Amino acid sequence: MVPAIQVEQVVKRYANLRALAGVDLEIAQGEFFGLLGPNGAGKTTLISVLAGLSRATSGTARIMGHDVVQQYRQARRALGVVPQELVFDPFFSVREALTIQSGYFGLRNNSAWIDEVLHNLDLTEKADTNMRRLSGGMKRRVLIGQALVHKPPVIVLDEPTAGVDVELRQTLWRFIRRLNEDGHTIVLTTHYLEEAEALCGRIAMLKKGEIVANDTTQNLLKRFSGFYVQLSLEPHVLPPTLMPLLKHETESGFQLALKDYAEVEQVMATLRVAGAKVIEMEVVQPDLEEVFVKIMNQESA
Image (cartoon, rainbow, N blue to C red; front, side, top):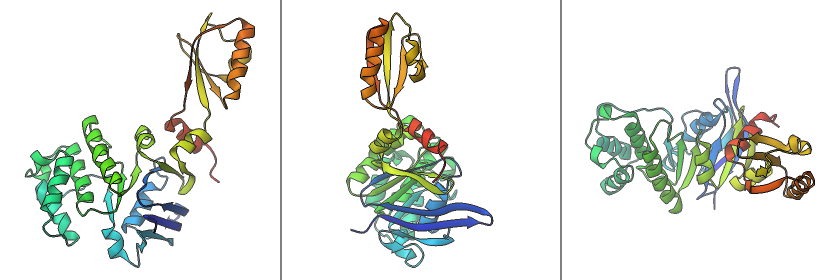
């Protein structure tokens, strides 16, 4: 089975700026994949190369086995992209915009799928409304609909929930999860890292045009951060020998940063010697935001 996305040594330069520095990336069919990085890391540039909006300075990129330059028609047909920017045609209604988008891909009699897309994005009541009269959140829903209207096997969502309400996020993710379960490959970029943690099975992180991490979400959480132990003590005093482990202190207790579970027994032994009584103890796993910050603070390889 060919990869959904295959990127080999892709470099992109703009004059003296190196936006991508030899990116290698392979995403299997059916994955829900996260592409994360700070502003300026190269995420949108990479998406533009995949979508044919920008040509790589060197290297190759393929969508479902189709080279984005040599086989651009097949590559475009296999890909749907939801861009960051709110780009829309002010002369058409929502339904007309989706119908015209269908026509770009040579699709006729696509009304049933358009109706389903409208329903799942909660746009049915706005189907005949002119695009100019929609709120920003509604316009973003239409952009998502346009990316899905030709049923592409690979869907790239570039900050799809930026500036939208919680209800739309939940509606969108239910629909996208269903598409993924049906076999569509999903690639997500987002600054809402809790979304990536909850949705993505694998994540790559970009920094200054280079991939600095690429692993399953669970492995990233385990590999880069350890865990925390939240303790409530009586009396509310942390023994001095444990102070180097202290991450955070509140009125209710202490949060200690540990590297592995073997340290838990060492902490408990220290507390026993100090005569501290443990009222409550909770193991707290790190979240993706903390992992992301740690990786971004490391030097690129």
